[in-house]
Length: 156
Image 1 (cartoon, rainbow, N blue to C red):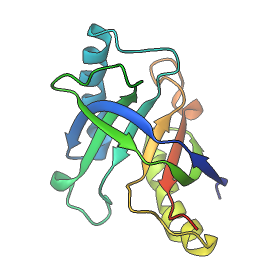
Image 2 (tube, rainbow, N blue to C red):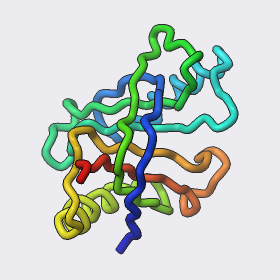
Image 3 (cartoon, rainbow, N blue to C red):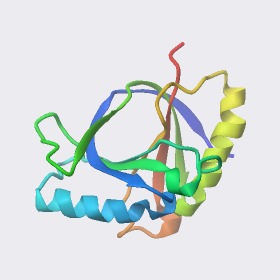
Image 4 (cartoon, rainbow, N blue to C red):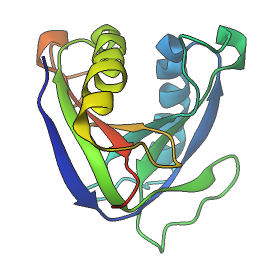
């Protein structure tokens, strides 16, 4: 149904804001993040927009869902309050590029975890999946949005 590539990725330093509640409402946290990083002039050439999703929304009550809305930053960019610093893991990842509205990501995750991963010969690592948004939703039609779903894998 989707193409998945195995890629060796470097760890990425990110700064951002925690999000609690429905994953469909993370855009509110991203709006707050964009205001902060724009005011602080933290966007750089090559900045990536990233979200880490810590919980499975199919088994975790919505009020207990946790995520992290972030941007990638070089080492010299401070994570001043209320921004927090995190890092994505380095190493092997399963990478699925999803095209379409963000509402369709849930189906892509289900396929990735329920169909592809069990038959792939790979095992999910000990870090949560995360997304990298490849284009700007304010300038892109929903059908043209591109999102990388990155799943850290156990090294073989």
